[in-house]
Image 1 (cartoon, rainbow, N blue to C red):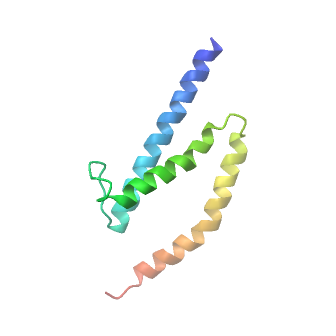
Image 2 (image 1 turned 90 degrees about the horizontal axis):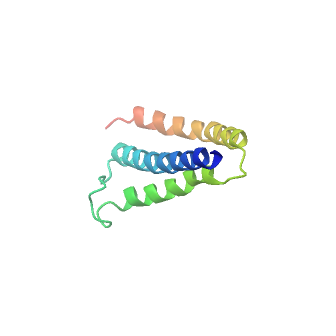
Length: 99
């Protein structure tokens, strides 16, 4: 029964990719004050739908069969470390606004 466990692992990866994309896009749109809602037409929530599709493409990398999970986790943490100072600068700019 190895094919059964392989199939269920594949299904879990697909479900995780879809759920992560929708949740991330919704939180980003809410945080930026943009139109959000999966019930909106494509013209009403362009950023939400675009970020869902781009995030799905990024999270679909885990579906590559020969890709080492450890190396992909290390790469994502290095990328996180590179982007974190940029996020902190923007947070400081928002905190110190005088409006």
